[in-house]
Image (cartoon, rainbow, N blue to C red; front, side):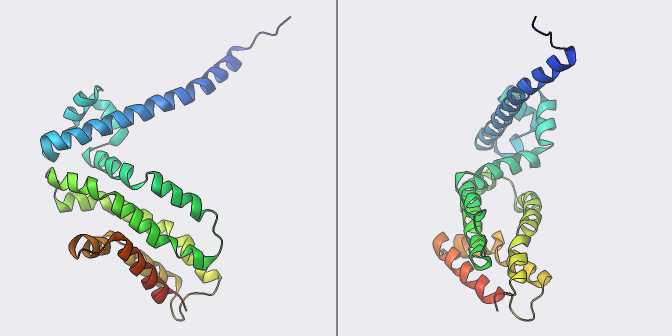
Length: 215
């Protein structure tokens, strides 16, 4: 005779089955809200991209938008992240995970910087064209700058452990150099204001990092 599942076992199995479905639904809702917000930026500008307007355009409740993004700043961060962390970024992640040589690891910050900053140009242009002023955009970027500082530690640690850092340069100073030179401000000045190509920026950054960090 087939053993009947207990209510607890059946509930656990049902939750395991439903969890991927709920996640897919949540991801789809997130994408739908972001898409609606992007279109509102085009049609109504940043001022017109209110949370209620986004909710109406996406066909969801206002509390749903707040629950997922928290604020307009959260929506803007999502639009930028969609551009920054796309297929090109994921491909670089796959490459860097296979690298163990410290010198080879130092080749990746310039590639990541170019990939991210070049990819976000269309969204930044959209935001500025929609009336989002520089201080508001800078507030959105501050969090990502902190994340960049944290994520670069592994490169500096590898150079330090290999005794490859320039004499007199300690870990904290090396982190500051790497973080500063890979800032989007330098990308903007060289590429967007002075007309450098992204490839020229990447080549310059790679050379500058080797010169400033390596012994």
